[in-house]
Image (cartoon, rainbow, N blue to C red; front, side, top):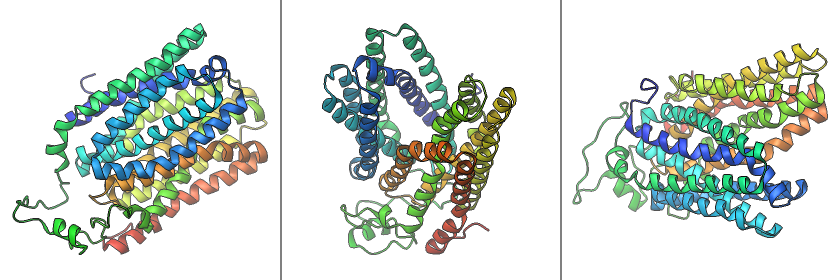
Length: 443
């Protein structure tokens, strides 16, 4: 156990926060559908409409939350958002009407997606540039472990299947947010010594005095570009203008990453529907796909980040991820018409390929989201990047289910081609960014 702990104490503290948060999330995810339908009395149609509205609010909240982090500080904004999430989650226990449920779901989704963007900006503040991607990979492993533990607790609640138990699970999730808010508040001591650390690849500069502001600080107030920041991302364009929304290469990477994030809908929606409706594989195979994915992510995610600190390597990683995801779609489609046992093996093999593409693509995407943002306005850039991911999470289930169930094997082929194209297009986009910044792109 000691060997598995991260050597950086900052990452260890973030891992502890992540574990508390994701255990609560896993518990909530396990029981939420039955809580909403059996305890609150919502129909499937009402639940679907409410969740769609909540998803739209989540997409819309990411960008302003990121800008708020730049203005007031990521830690302060994050504590506020998580605190609101605690209150909102607990509020489900008091809901007695459908309009109140929709309003509360929209609030909870907005602060959840907003806090995700701000959390990524916080990682940029407290982790050195050369350790951000590896740190995020470690935290993603902890996330999977936490969700597994929370899901196990949720299984107990599902087995008891009573109103008091469901309410207890929801309130336990709310309590976890309270703990997380307190732990984030206590990170204040990390921001001063760590946020100023520079990457080993960057030359160190003398700290400016009050009487002699740095060139960058002078440029910010005057509107003159900072010569040390060729992309111009370090300039303050005014608080009302979001630099990420005018950064063409970054917006292109955000869109391409959103397409790659359709892989999550493939695993959570497409594969289960395909197994149940279009193959003879045993239904327990659905659970097996989740086990395979979780184990491979826990095993491979940290290793997949090696070398991705370099922009060119990160772009190539996204290309390999797109090809792996495309191959997984083709393999899964072959399960149609096969005998039960063979169909199960083929599907699990396809999910293994999907998991490989997932860990490689996530590592490359994280690296590019930080690298193309430079060292300023991390909240703005992570807010836009997270909005793309949130949009994919919202639209993905409908798109994937339409392709897979509506068009069968041809739908899988089309989906695979889309994922491969998104991954391979990362390299020319990164070359575009290199030409803009005056830095070399991928070979």
